[in-house]
Length: 90
Image 1 (cartoon, rainbow, N blue to C red):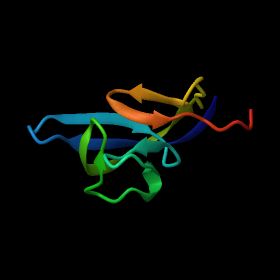
Image 2: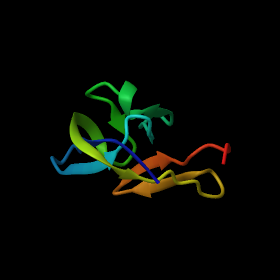
Image 3: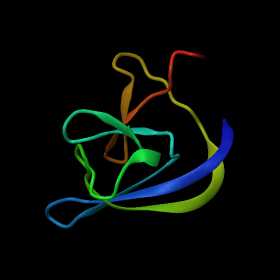
Image 4: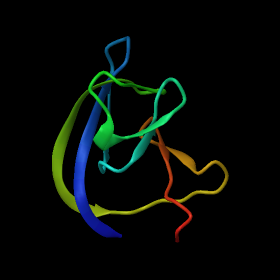
């Protein structure tokens, strides 16, 4: 674990339901077209697979965070968002 700035990504689906995930700016999330984009480079309006369109990214403060690495494709679900796990450097 380490400390990092955390942001809340807010998405809205076509039915108007909102989804939220807390993450760092360096976290890659899967877009609707099958590419990963890091939160820090993600424009408002980006469509995320299964989560909807990004309507805001809000600074939430500094917190203890963990880097996850999972077997297989190294992707996982985080509150309905599809995230990419850490690199092989560990």
